Image (cartoon, rainbow, N blue to C red; front, side, top):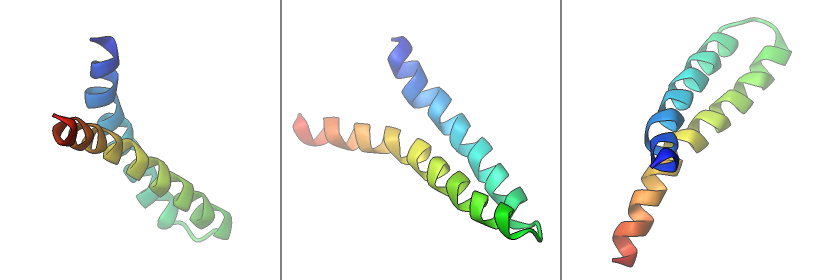
Length: 62
């Protein structure tokens, strides 16, 4: 049950935090922060799409 809580609760929360950091870094003028924003975007997408992928995987296998 703890693993399900991590996947379906913690990962979407981490995705929201990553998207917020993405927006904050993207708004800055420094080139290094704009490059760092790409890492936050990738992390956010990975955290957001993992639960969706698991639900789709289990739905297709049943």
